[in-house]
Image 1 (cartoon, rainbow, N blue to C red):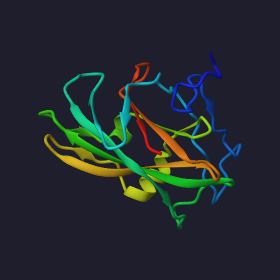
Image 2: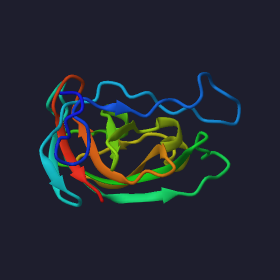
Image 3: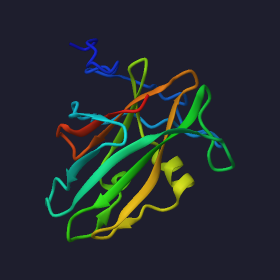
Image 4: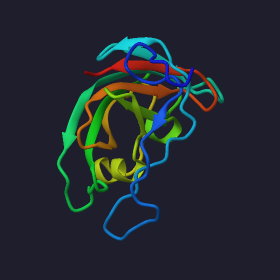
Length: 177
């Protein structure tokens, strides 16, 4: 049912955060469109770990934990669209395989749901502006990084969903409030 809550105030048939700018406007960032939101995964408490495997080769495995959320102060390269604010999600990745791979922001998708049940896709451009170029994660390496979202000004982050691949159930749903 499209309006049924999934137990964490996030919609199973999600409402998406509409783009506030119909075209790219110089000096204003577009809000990413929500694409391919995976169905909910196991419930995980903030800070706890889930194992995620590369869905194409299954050769890269990592332990992932969502460590919390923080507001991001706008800056020269970090400007939200009108009516939005920037929030980052801190993620810890530990590559437990014998092969290197890329951080989740490259190979996988990460979504945030606010307390009102609206889903947001991470903003790759603003994440890059905050953290730099996407990087690999070598075998055995552990790395903390942040992922940026543009959420409505009044919204409160509630849930972070990490997907293992397109068309699959999410690897985990972390409660962050």
